[in-house]
Image (tube, rainbow over all chains, first blue to last red; front, side):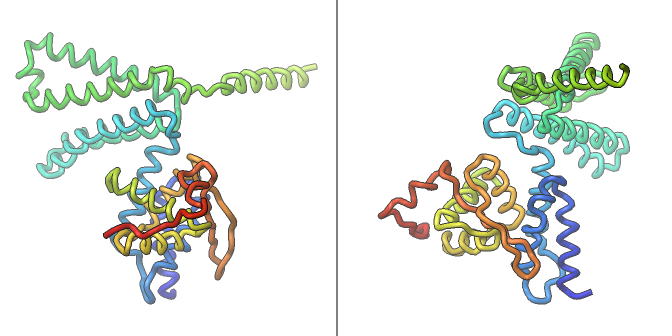
Amino acid sequence: MTDQEHLERACRRLLAWYPRAFRDEHGPEILAVLLAAARDGQRRPGLAGSADLIRGGLWLRLVPGVPRSARTVRAAVWLTCAGAVMPAASLVLGLVTLSAKGIVGGLVVTALWLCMARAIGQGRNGARIFSAVLSGVVTLALALAVFALGGPGHVAGMTVPSLVLSVLNWLIGLAAAGLLRLPASTAFFWPPGRAQARHEARMAERARIAAIRY
Amino acid sequence: MGVRARQEATFLILTALADGSQHGYGIITDVQQISGGRVRLRPGTLYTALDRLRADELIGVDREEVVDGRLRRYYRLTPRAPGGSLMRRPGCRLTPAPR
């Protein structure tokens, strides 16, 4: 394999970080730019360039084209990403202290927040409903923990800082769920015309089945 | 990359395109020149910015060429872009950013 082929293969691997639609659209151009910018004999993309590509890909996977006009939805995606910071920190803490509970818990909760952010960005109404339900459940659980178990400080073995952080993340989740219930957000999840298109598709399907039957 | 750096990158890309249509690698070299060698855009930053600018209808695809078997897509400003029609008025010239 020549140096150029080596480099091209490494670059293609990096492009896998991007969502498929973006890769199909811009992949060949990005590859051309990476190869044009490479020095003679370069066999792999530089560290900074690779990091930049990976960050761009992750960002696009999280906020896949929420238009600027949908401000409330963009804010909700941002908030949901912010919600992943605390569990990610507990994941790192778990890795450092080698606590299996910390690692698994941190991983699951971080993944949950990030998946939520992604699903909201994709305009999935299920994510909107799920975020509302989840906020409700967490509100109940926190309220029970605080009032049933005798005041903060010794809530189910929680320390005060971890309780404060839990409350903070609960507020973040609540704010995101609230933003998603605003009429401005509803338009993103149910754009005008979509409900009508669904209705028409259902009617066409019914007509098709009726035509087969008779 | 912070919001400011991203805004600056977007601004420099639009400035590079104000001179006429340009392809990805050309934008990188133009931006380096406009910023006096200070800003060297990386492909990841460039294409996420181009994709967003296209979604916001500030830029569009001018034409595509194949050079040495590689795709080159030229972008241009749309009339909606800041400077899309403004910067092309007579007497308006681009000067390099002060250092």
